[in-house]
Image (cartoon, rainbow, N blue to C red; front, top):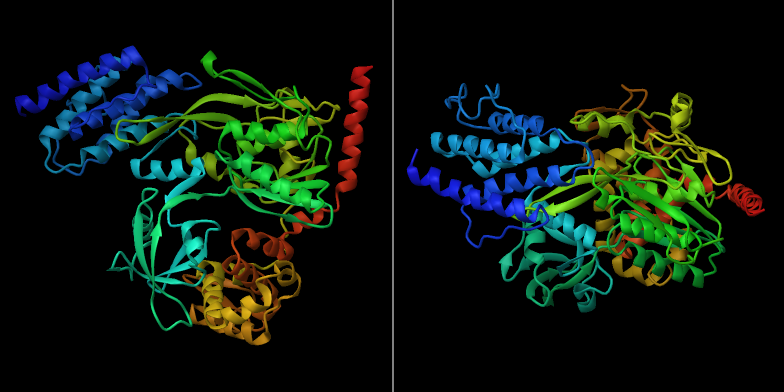
Length: 628
């Protein structure tokens, strides 16, 4: 062990810890040229303090430290390193971590013991394993985010990134444009669906991975990138110089009219731009005659609390309670009310939810349910009643710490049970909900009285495990999805549609591009198209044989009995039509088609407007009684 390697970082850490104690976790420690050791120790210190200073419950510092060192040791590559009676001994003889300073000093000793007694260990990776160990002792939603992932997550929730503005897939080693994002730099230059990007900045781009494509085409706003494009049907190569710009990441997947008075808006997450997108979509739908709304939150995992509140308040008069938060730390406590008279107050609304709807989605649906404001339809939601806050660490990685619980207006905590450190069991709980109806019955029958609450109108609602819909619609289990799932796994629909547009793109655009609604109702694949698609599936490993009486997967192949493909061909045709809409228009055109073909929940929800009206009457009568 060299004197310099041990002493210098130790002195630096003493200074760092002093700053931490004075300023708290929200301060970002900056060092223009930190060495890896110093950065790693600062990072561990920041992660530990972020938990202790902000976690909504009582964090067991001693257990946190011990688990973090176990993870640290378990990933050491050098099997000859002495462990017993050393600073990394997992039996911790005589070690009791009672303060943050204890944890910092003990981790420093363990870190430099490994750094000075091994050769070639990746100390940064070991530190990350130690930090993950810290978070593994907490609730399932507190987590560590690596530097590379932090930028992606930040872009996703900021609602934009900087680049050329195309959605792409790598098809047969070639970058294939699925669609140019409307209004983006590529769209403005005339780059279109089906274009193949074969060179970037005069360098061959054939064989690029998805990550290589993103890393090469994204860049600072205002910077330029040269691309060479091969366009099907055009003999000459096309060269474009594209000036990168801000590219929006939309959270409203689709918005369109279901009939002459019903609008549909699907939100995929709650990011910085969600409320703005929602209001723009609703404005366009109102121009088309929308008088009532289906809000689709299925599969929406949540996002920003502020955006959930902003969406929810559009359905209520000013001053309506929407959600409250409670924490061990009073600075994270809050009661949130609508700050204005919402544009949708009084208008009929149905909210679609399922087991994938969580967090911010449950805040919106919980507020509407508790105030008897709209009909909640679908399946029991995930059950995430915890709020996280994100803190940046010294190397641009982040930690996400649960800072509070949230409660719906009736007082419900909808968080489902969890064991600290039991993340996998918690995450997979939703897959044990085999039938939505029986799941809801079993859940509500087992609920203790302490978790039963009342809506404004006196209806019983439940805490402790998500939002139970007012009207439950289970999945249709009579359909065989083997062929379509095989096709999705093999990207068969995407590839067939891409080939179809390469050969027939000009004729297709001439007939359909100006009238999407006509395409939606009138377009059909020919029998020849379906035979070609069937042949492509056979080429990808689908086997038609009399040896099976029902479909079954065997490794990477699908075995189906004769005539089965024809029985379920309508499903493949529907998926291919939706993929055709996506590639010919954009992602927002995908959902109207896919919903037309497959969405039985949406179709059944459209029969429930009488129930929405009865709920509104119940709520009105309740308000009259309370006023009287």
